[in-house]
Image 1 (cartoon, one colour):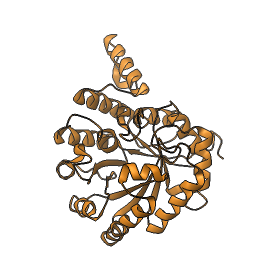
Image 2 (cartoon, helix red, strand yellow):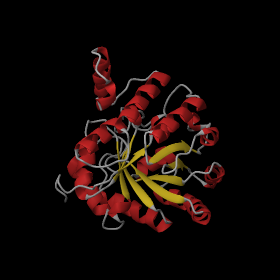
Image 3 (cartoon, rainbow, N blue to C red):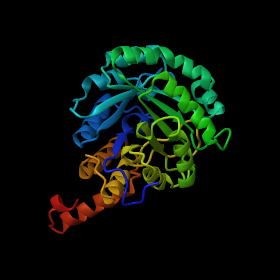
Length: 318
């Protein structure tokens, strides 16, 4: 385990707001707003943006315009644009949209898999085989995502051994990287370290990422706990947007602004412009009429507004 003086020097922040953050919105978000959001995030220096999902609009209506969104964004060199795909049909649409990476998703809990993707974990992996083959053939990165890795709304506790089993299956599928997701936000630092330590024994730690929701206020602590093991990739959602339709009360991903603020405070490079991300969080929450759940974002916006009111240049405030 690393001390605070021996943490990763660079951390990849994977921005999932345009997909995970917006997919549960009840009111349609216009494609133009999504495109603007992604372009702002790219301009802020985000190295990786999860931009779309090529899934059935019957199940996720908010993602129905993913092809239009991908066609409309200004692609920034150095930013990877990824999309979720549940099957070969989705994969074909993603390839047509020229994504850089496709994401397949399963769960560490059989109960959650049945509720969320209407099949067993083993069946979900079989569905992904043609997707994986198509990705490798096309030279597109393949990422696997494991939901409810730290607790399930239906079965309760999830053991690290169950997560390791799914990590092995995704590794055998040919995934270039794997996300370990606390979908309902019940994880605590000790549990996070236990599951990442176990997963790292069967899949390289450098290719694992943390995906933490903040339902119980543990997300930043969980990021730090994973950092201390050497994990150097984390998902975050601008303004803390999002939730889980299959987990009552689950809040969004940890806010991007809060993660970047903490990482920069630890002396860790992210390549991300914190001011630009804070302004992006303000933009999207105003655009869709939602509260801004980023504490760092709200505090910095208030600070800059006060400085401008006092005649102080806000340019040096960040």
